[in-house]
Image (tube, rainbow, N blue to C red; front, side):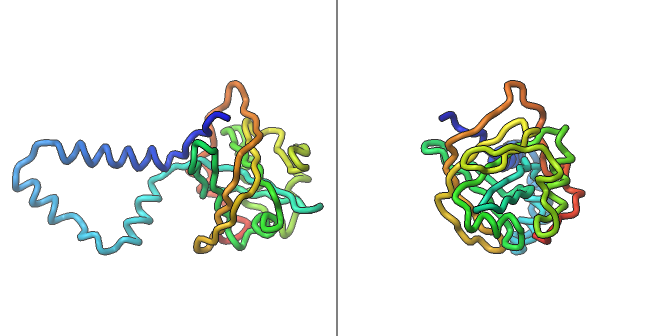
Length: 206
């Protein structure tokens, strides 16, 4: 199986590193260096710096769906990453407050969908609505995929995998999956990123 594209987190951090390297190699007077050093934070407020840094990242958004018994669920997620090439492994973070998390606790598999810019309505549906109140699948086109998991018809790409581990990580639980089936359109569109859905009001608090 080919490697899935790495999330932009690594690219963003590399870009930031490259900027820092170029700045470090540029010429400047001792006075300039002293002024810049004095104006920088001493680095003690790590939480604030972290919030500012991650606020710059425009990572891809996914819709994750799952099924446990007769119950289906799905939600919009941004906390994801490919974490291994061989064997392929992908990590999905689900909020403990989320209906999809409640179903995924009992599920064996997840399906991860990418969305094109034309699919912002799907992003809104799975981001703003909650499965505690409505059946999201009554409001979109889908079909039964591997092991009966719901696959969104309009998503330009998706992959499914078996859940290998569930790892509690703060207010989210990380689901480690083993991708083993999927589809990608031959001419995929530009994908939905966080910047395009930042304005959405989540169905649940994170």
